[in-house]
Structure formats: C-alpha cells, structure tokens
Amino acid sequence: MYRATRSDDVVATYRIRSRNLEKAAEAIAIGQSIGNPNVRLDRETAEMWSRYGCEIRSLTSEGDGYGTAVIGYPAGNFTEGSFTHILMSVMGGQLDIDIIEECRLIDLDLPPAIVAQYAGPANGIEGIRARLDAHDRPLVGGIVKPKTGLTVAQLVEICQQMADGGIDFIKEDEILGEIEVCPFEARVEAVMKALESYRVIFCPCVTAPVHRLAGAMETLRRQGSSGFHYNIWAGLDAYQYAVKLSGGMFAHYQKSGDRAMTDGRFSIDFTVWCKLTRLAGADFIHVGMVGGYLSEPVDVMAKRLEALQGPMGGLKGLMPSLSCGATPGMVEGLRGMFGNDIMVSSGGALHGHPQGTHAGAKAFRDAAEGRSSRELDIAIETWGR
Image (spheres, rainbow, N blue to C red):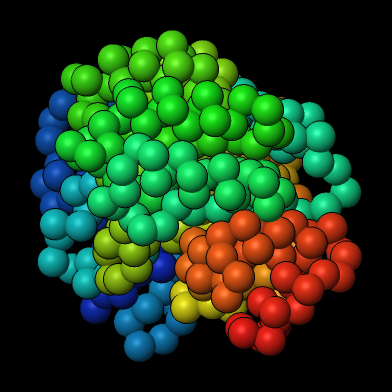
C-alpha cells in the first residue's frame, strides 16, 4: 500500500497515536476507501483497489507511539460539491477503531479537480475593500453587545454609534436568535434603514434551521441586507447553501464552538477548516486571535491566513477577523505581524470604552488609520497595547 502513483489525489496528513503505527495507517487507508480494515473479501479486485483504494504516501514515527501518516484518497471517490462526503471520508470510520488511539487531521491538500467543484468567495478581499472604499489599512469590525436581550430600537442605536465612529463591519453576536423583543425580520429592516448612508457591512446572525433557511435568506434579500453570518454548527454544506441563497451578499463564517471539533485526540486542525470554509464561499471568517483572551501562536495564525489567502485554484482570498479580546492598542501590532489584509474585531473593548460605543469605534478606526486621537489614547491607557 506504500505508493504514490496518482497525482490528483486528495491528500490527508494525520498525526496519529497507536501501539502499531503501520496497522493504524492501513486501517485508515483500507477502512476509508474499500472495506473492513481486518477482513478481505473476494469481491475486492485489483482494479477496484487501483481505482478506489487509498494510498499510504508516507508514515513517519515520532516516538512514544506517535507518528505522521500521509494518505492519498482518489478524487473520484468523492461526491461532487459535498463537504459532508469529504469530511465523512477523511475523518470517519477510523475514529471507531481501537488501534487508533488518537487521530488528528493536520492538513488536507485538495487537487484542482476538487477545488473546481466549489465557487469560493463571491466578493473576497477586493470586493470588500471596494464596497467600503477602504484601502491600504486593516479593517475594523464591531460586534453587538449585549449579546441578546436588546430591543430593536436599542440595536439600531448601537449600530448607528458604531457606524458614526467609523467601524467598517458590524455583526450581531452569534448568540442572538429569534427572540420576542428583537425579531429577525424587524431588526434587519430597522438596522439596514438606519445604516443606509454609511459605508459599512452589516451581517445579522442567521440561526434558522436548514428547512427554514431559504425563507431567512429571502428576508435578508428583501430587506437589502449587505451580509449575513452563520455559525460553524450549521455545517459546511448548509453554509455553502446559505451563500448560494444570499445572491452575493457578504458572507461571514462564525467559528464559535469550533474547538469541539478542532481540539483534542480526534480532531481537525483549524487550518484545514479555513481551506474548506474558503471553498464554501465565506468572505469573512472569525480566525482567532494573537493576544486577548484566546491567544494563538503567531506561526499558527500565519498558516491559517495562508490557507485563507494563498493560491487556491484561482479562488478569491477572504478577510480574516481577529477577535477574542482585541483592543484598539493591539491593532498596530497585529498589522505589523500580518499586514493590512486583516480585520480586527471587538465587542467588549469597543462598547466598554470609558467614553462609550462611539468613542470605542473611533479608537479602533484611528488605530487602523495610524492617526492619534484622544479616544485612542484613552483606550490604550485603559487596556494597553
């Protein structure tokens, strides 16, 4: 099974732990393509194995039972345009095999034939900047707080204060659902009317189940919403469906909850998720944070940004939103680490500015523009850099 005869495979790289690494790698390769890892059948022909069987490209021992296995999956095995089938194949039945004590998908290389099945971002970085007329600087995003319980009037007031302060992007918090005091249709209509004169992208939170998703997206189109966001728990196929239904709105992908899938013994590295989200059509994605209360190493974040913005079959790059404890004083440092094609987003340090929401938004915008102001000085005095 150790060969690399096909150049157009989906190539998955796993970090595994097992008392027998070779048997573990074989269990993945056999079980996720042809059949039972331990039982061979008469119907398994050489032609079948050649066309549909996985190839173990390499297996490297790291000691203490850990190793790295690189496995090629025939591109023809996959249902066209289906994230469900990709994920079911590369992270499926092998997780039920006791000889595989840990299995973490750390990379996934997709051949051009697979990438071509997906539309990718409708707008991408260039479309975002054109809409905002924002060039040669990081973007700044605002997250509505309190998360839930606001009335429509209160939500409108908060969004106007953020827009007046110069925020580029506003999203409702992912916790905000269809609640009595702030129903979805009424709040979208009211906020879009209030923001008509501003160059700002507003992304309300869609929490509709799949069977009501078409109706929710029709509401957004009818109300002239500039964007939307949908959480990771909806699933990538549902997210891709929402993007198609939106008719070209700016699509934000909210990752809150991802660590249930991206951290632990059986998990998928978030960099892989970034690649898949790009295929699904996101224009923005919550990518994590360097600093704040959920700080990732710089090299980890750099890999995520490469997955989002590097070459990928001609697909547009998308805008990573760095948040989870971001403050205005951090903007300059984040720009130095990652350049201009990032968005620094905040809720707490924006609305919690000692002078209020408007001042908090202005402090973030001033930081992104590289200009000094009293609002920015107060923010740095309050939270540091």
